Image (cartoon, rainbow, N blue to C red; front, side, top):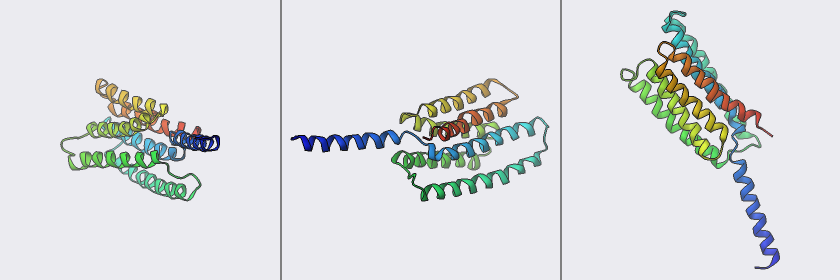
Length: 190
């Protein structure tokens, strides 16, 4: 191999390394984590407030507009991102695949088996599903995702031992672990 060929090969390797390093950041999709972390935490919080009699059961309907807002914001943000210069990387596509699989399983578990998983059991399912997504990202080298996933799992374990405040603890896990991860990704944008 002569010097120009070696230089071309080194430049190609540098481009591959640069692309894979960029792949570790999800700063251009951090808003999704913030939106859904706030929604997930607010659902757990609302359930506990209703259970303690602070709010009537009809207050659960307050989540419906928030769910619609979260869905609309996600679609709007996703379409804007798709048209922007920030294109989805391989990690983003794989993250979305893992997200859809865990979301699908969590929906089937909570809606399809609502008698098997009543109350905070369904909140625990969503906590586990969300932590799987964060741990998937963490496996690809993202330390913030690892911390967020650990916070979610810690909230699940803590909720198990803190009878009477399970919803508050699970909500804190979503606010700090999931939405917090999204915020760190947004703030890490160069």
